[in-house]
Length: 64
Image 1: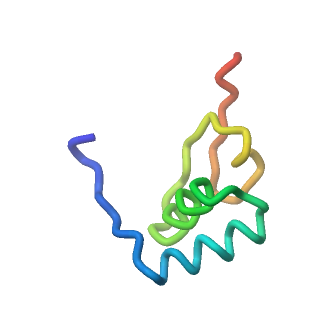
Image 2: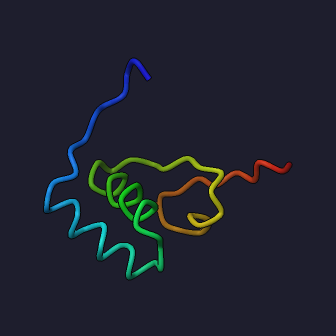
Image 3: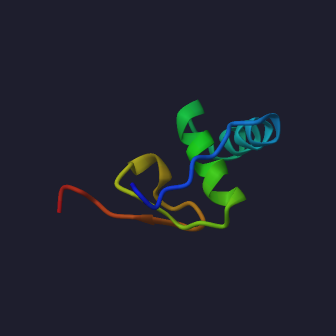
C-alpha cells in the first residue's frame, strides 16, 4: 500500500467506466476498477469471478 497511487474518479474515468460496464456487463464498482486498470495500462490481478476472461486480467481461483 505504501507504493499505491491514488486516482481521482473524474468525469473522463466515469464515462469510461460506464462504457466498460455496459460492454462487459460489469457492476458499477467493478467497471470503475476495470476502467482504471485500462486507463493506466495495468494488469488487474483478482480473485473476483466477474473479471475472469477479460483482457489484461489475471484471475486466480481462491478456492484452489
